[in-house]
Length: 68
Image (cartoon, one colour):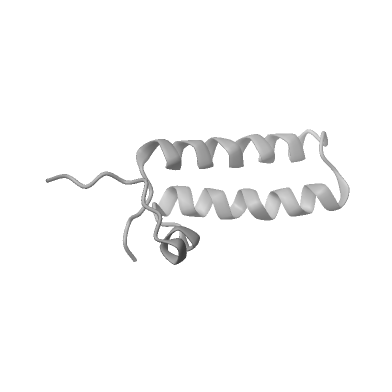
C-alpha cells in the first residue's frame, strides 16, 4: 500500500472524524444521518491514520509530496 495522502489531508480527515464522533456522542446528530456520518468518519479516521486512500489510488490522486 503506497502512501498517497499529504499531512494536511490526513489531519483534516482525522479532525472531521473526531468532530462527527463528538456530534454523535452528544446526540446532536441522530438516526440514519448519524449512522451514515459515523461510517464515513470511521473511514476518514482509518485512511487518515494509515495515510493511504483507496479512492485516491483509483483516480490517480496524490496529495503527498515526495522527498527528492
